[in-house]
Image (cartoon, rainbow over all chains, first blue to last red; front, side, top):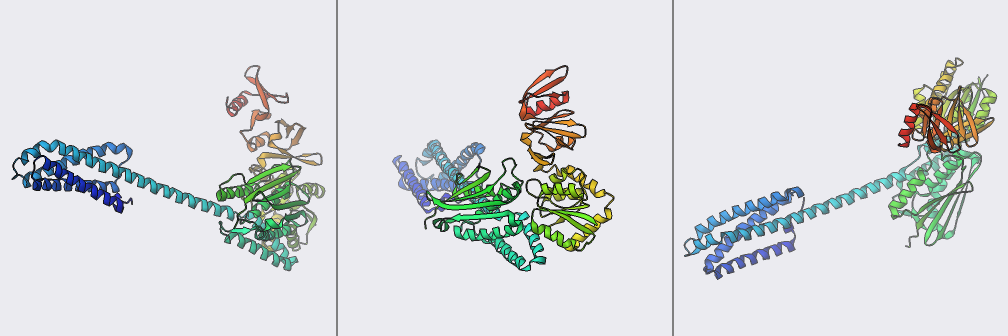
Amino acid sequence: MATSPLSVNRFRLIFSICWLVLMLDHSIVLHWLDVPWQAAIIDSIISNILLLLICLLVMNTLRYYLPRREQYLHIFFWCVFLSTVWLAITRWLLGMTLQQFTGYPELLGHSLSIRYSIGFLLLGCVTMISVLWYTWEEQKENETRKADAEKLAKEAELYKLRQQLQPHFLFNSLNSINALIGSRPQEARKMVQELSDFLRGTIKKEEHQLITLSEELDYLKLYLDIEKVRFGYRLKTEIDTTDEALTCSMPSLLLQPLMENAIKFGLYGTTGEVLISLRAGVADDHLVVTVTNPYDPDMQMPAGTGFGLKSVKRRLYLLFGRNDLVETNQANNAFVVTFKIPVIHA
Amino acid sequence: MRKVVIIDDEPLARSIVIEYLQNHPDLEIVQECNDGFEGVKAIQQWQPDLVFLDIQMPKINGFEMLELVEQPPAVIFTTAFDEYAIRAFEAHAVDYLLKPFTQERFDKAIKKWSEQAPAGTDKSATQNLLETAAHSPAQSQRIVVKNGSKIKIISAHEILYLEAADDYVKVHTKEGYFLKNKTMSHFEQVLDPQQFVRSHRSYIINIQQITRIDAYEKDNHIAVLKAGTQIPVSRSGYGKLKEVLGL
């Protein structure tokens, strides 16, 4: 619900002062026109209090019912109508209360048109200000609502992007565990542990919580160990990082989707052994990570690849508002993904 | 003894099938394969009675591999998660095992197969399955062909045009043509209709390759490709071409 402008203390004070000045001015003018002080003050109080009531009525009505642009003409006619009603009541009350003053009824008759003009102008001003105020309030409310909705959508999207667990990976891992249980139960147990730690990691991390590269690599290792059990000798990995890079902060769960993408691309796009390498270093105040996988230029990207890459791009955009943080290159039968994270100085 | 071939790129996935097969001493594992290339060779060499086949494999998937085999054997598919394939299996009553699976489920699949074999009903089911499986989005962007003993993957953009040739379709590329044992209407359905237009009963053209279309005799036209090849265009084919090219 919109708040009335009069709920703000400062505005209430200004409004009251304006009205007092108006009443004072009204009495002085009447006295100047040879009306005795007593009559002038009574006249001023009656007509202006009535006008004030009508103004408050209009302000309050607009608070609940704000006209749309195409209805502004209605407001004009309402102002005309209300001013007329106000004038009729004022005239009737003044005529009753002040008729004993000599010359007053004549003056009242003559001044009707001026009274009407002033009343109409004042009512018009108050109405216009109210309309502006409430429209502005409404806009402000819309904007906060929109910002809230955007924030919610962004959070939901980030959450979804982090949670994208490839069902293929999960079921194939379970299948491998099933196979190990019969032949090598110790390894099965180890893999169950790794898979659980990996899954726990995908659920618990908060989006804005930054972790160090070395923590992220520990987590990645869980994933790689599982994949190595699945693919056996075909999958080889190589991780090479500088000590400086290891202490850099980064959003969590970025490496795993990229690695998953590289593994899928490498393993399903070629036959034989596949070496996936990850390098990390610091350059120009950015943590720079590259992931390289072999690929066959004659092949289409296998179905399902590219999602990890897209989700990492989108996440970095949502987190840093930049589109230039992820780059891909294809050369010499290698597909290279490079991403940069601005170094956050604690 | 009946012969079994196992095709899966994950060693542990093969080992679980081997383990479960110990319950079935009448089945002999003649070969394990790492990918579809080995699979094609093994099937040709051994003419197995039953094949356990994974779908997601390096370079060519299980369906594409089967297309390369002249007489597809009975197949039990093993897959972890592939919504599309599962829909295809169910539509054609082809048995499949969802990884991970139990010994009981495995035995049931074997029982079902041995009750049907050797009548060959499984084989026709597999054939029908391949027709629909080829409509999956990943596959419509490429055609897998066999060239002698070599397997070639042709991306859709490499195709110049397709030409009907008896029971086969000639897939023309810059490197010459490859034969594929499919029908023209199959390709007409599978390939992207915004890219490939059936200009004639016997021709499907990749519209990217067209340089111009000339009038030729009454009611007929000829499409000239970049390489200079002239492809007949029938009256209805001309209408389709005009629509896709936005003329």
